[in-house]
Length: 67
Image 1: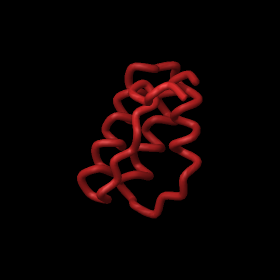
Image 2 (image 1 turned 135 degrees about the vertical axis):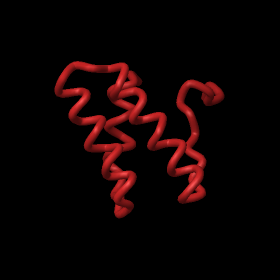
Image 3 (image 1 turned 135 degrees about the horizontal axis):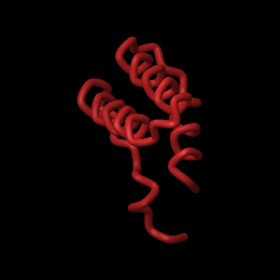
Image 4 (image 1 turned 180 degrees about the horizontal axis):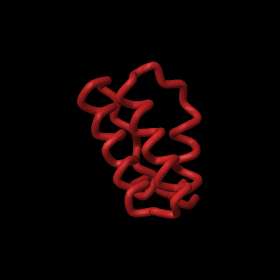
């Protein structure tokens, strides 16, 4: 799975939080400008926000045990 596929999976989740939506929008804008560095920053910040504010601790695909 690529970083792009992973972000699509994360973005598919419904979000009601305004901050989460702002990070999603900022990521979309960055990707439209082909600024993958900024897009990655947005994904990291959204993940940190969800952990801090929503108590979510998403599993990082790169750290999963092989099945």
